[in-house]
Length: 74
Image (cartoon, rainbow, N blue to C red):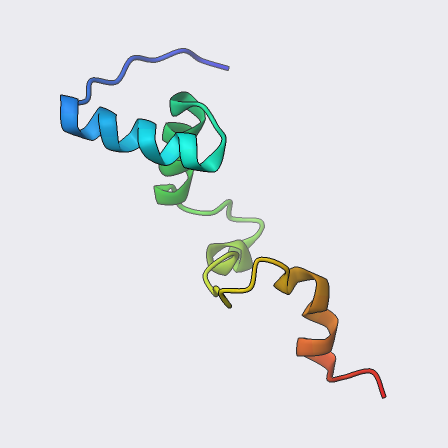
């Protein structure tokens, strides 16, 4: 990993720290995720551009993805 330094104003840092805390991660990890989100996807996986774009509002939705994709288990 390469270490870098980023300057944020007080309000940006406070908001980033608050969001990181709510996610249970460090500010550094929050910034890494924010940067990754803005980078283009690897050329060998163009479909990854759309990963995570749909939110159902149900935190357990991944448990029923097969039912959503393939229909209910009758």
